[in-house]
Every structure is written in structure tokens, then in C-alpha cells.
Image (tube, rainbow, N blue to C red; front, side, top):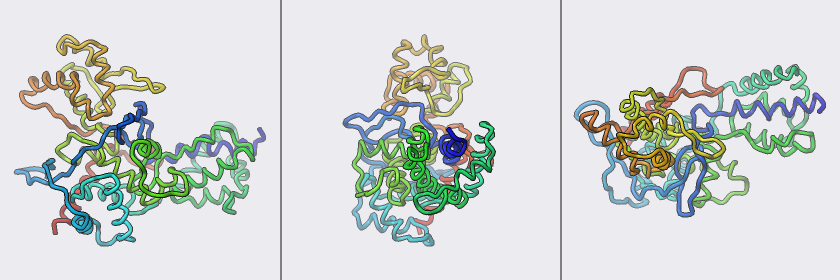
Length: 420
């Protein structure tokens, strides 16, 4: 392949994928296989690489003032409220000074209605807190220094193939479909939506200008005001009808305000979480559904077995869609005699790690029966996952715990705003 065309192909086969990663693990490929049961609804991980299950009939949350410490949320039975009451509740929740406040309110309310989520202050505030954290109420959030990130990645990869960066830039002077050169568009990149559009244009011209077939798979995995995974959106619509008419691809819907809010609300709230505190939903949003439950499970297994385990919420590893073992499984196998379960039975239950039903398995019940005795009371059923966040866009040490606490702070501020 001529060096000019090779330089062009280099850009998108190895560079954009690296710089398009979000600031959180949401976009990272999940280890679990994607399964969509005929009667299922959107479930697990923000990457949508986990199974799907039916959402809860009721998820309203209400705040109970504690005697000491932080506010704690509980899940009581709350009668449904009317559409008018829901709109009034949402109006109290939204910050007074955001651009196109009425548009945000409409998209949020429509998403909750379509997803059959209860119109509660807590649910609205949870979604609002994530939007504020991920995009500061920008429908297409900017990524600071994006051109520098892209060119840096291109330079690194080009050097690996002994291609000078100036040669790559010369090759990218070719005009793109919007009239501007590809180089000019990279130089002026501000958002992931622009990156997605740029890649789509490059991909459409791939055959004409000799790009490799690998370019047919768009590496840009997340976008929009809630940093939604495209893969999650694609899985969700197979289980729950998308309520909006569209002229373009579902991928492009993720980068819109209405699509981003819709799928982000689904990721955050449309599953039965076993938590007393919304904090753990925020951690799940970042690390994958049920990660907080699974991290607590890993913590008690570690104490029971005496083995050191990562508290990352991933109980199994997956290769080519097939579940395999790992440190958590090995630690459980060391408890075989105390659990009274075969290795096959343990693996059978671990395969439900991304589902609500894992909490009702024989394995889960037996582990906690032992753990409650060891702890002299109820062992923890929820814990913040311990995960370091990696991305070209992150310039300092961040963790899932940091993300959850940061969103929770915004959530508490929202509750206070709504109370006045």
C-alpha cells in the first residue's frame, strides 16, 4: 500500500479508538457475553455486554434522615403520581440556569415516561446528577485538548511504523464530504460527536481511497450528555422499543440530547438494584450493573477464604463469550467443603453475576450464611468497587469510588434544591 494511503488508514485503525474512550469504565468492553432473552428487558453493564432482564415494577426512593452520618435512601412503596405532578417535581429538580431548560425537561420527562420509571424526586435527581457530572448540561460535551490527544496518538502509532507525522498530515489534506480536509477537521475537533461524524465519513470513503476493511467497525463507543455506550443502546432497543422516530442510525441517536438522556436513564434506573443508598447505583453506572453488590460479595469471600481479591465487581472472566474462572472462583473452590457445593454448581451460579437473580442463588445464600456468622451480624451486601479509571482524557488518578462520591454530592445538592 502506498505510504500516503497507509498513513490515512493508520489514523482510524489505531488512533481514534484510543482517544475516544470515556473518562469512566462504562465504555470498556465487558467480560460478560451479551444475551437478550425473549422476555427480557435492558440489564447489566453500561457496555450492554451483559444479559438483559426485566426492570423493576417500582423503584421510587425516598430519603430517611439518619441519626448520624450521611443521608441514606430506602425503597418504600410509593403510590404513582400523575403526569402533572411529575412535571412539577421535575421542574423543582432542574437547576434554574441551564441552557434550554425547557428542552432538557421535556427530554427527561419523555424518557421516564417511555421507560416507565416513577416520577420521583430521587429518580429525577439521580439522572440530573449524572448529567451534570458527565457533561455539565451540554448535549454534546466538549473534550478539552481533543486535537492534541488525537495527534499525539497518531504520532505514537506512526512512529511505530516508521512513518513521519508530517507525512500523515499531508495525506490527511484530502477533502472530506463536508468540504473541509480531514486534517482541518482533526485540528478543530471539540466533541465525540464530531469524532463520530469524522469517522463515519472516513469509513464511507474507505473503499474508494483504499482504507482497510477494519475501518468498517467504528471504534467510538460512547457519547452524549450521559456518556452512553453505543453497544448498550443497540442491546436495549432489541428488548425495549425505542420511542422516537429517527432518520439516521441508532448510533447517531446516542450523540443527541434526547437519545443520550433516554439511554442514560435506562442504564441508571431501569433495573432492580438491591441497594439502600443511591450511591451504589452511581458506582454501577460507572463500573457496570451490580458491581457494588458483587464487590461486597468479593469482600466477604476474601475474608472467609483468607485470599486477597480485587474488589472490582467482576466475578468471572470471559473469552470469546465463554465464561472462565479467575481469582474469585478459585477462592470459592477453597470453600467447597464449607459451602457443600460442587465446582459446577458454583460456576452455574457465578454465571448470573450480571443479573438480579444472582442474589437469590444457592451460592450467594450459602456464602452470606457463613459470612454473617463470621461478622457477628449482617455482612455487607454493598460496597463501592475499587477500580482505577483509565483514559487518554484523564490526566490525574481517578477511581470508581471518586466518580460515585462526586455524583452523590451533586445528587444531595439536587435533593436540597427540590425541597425548597
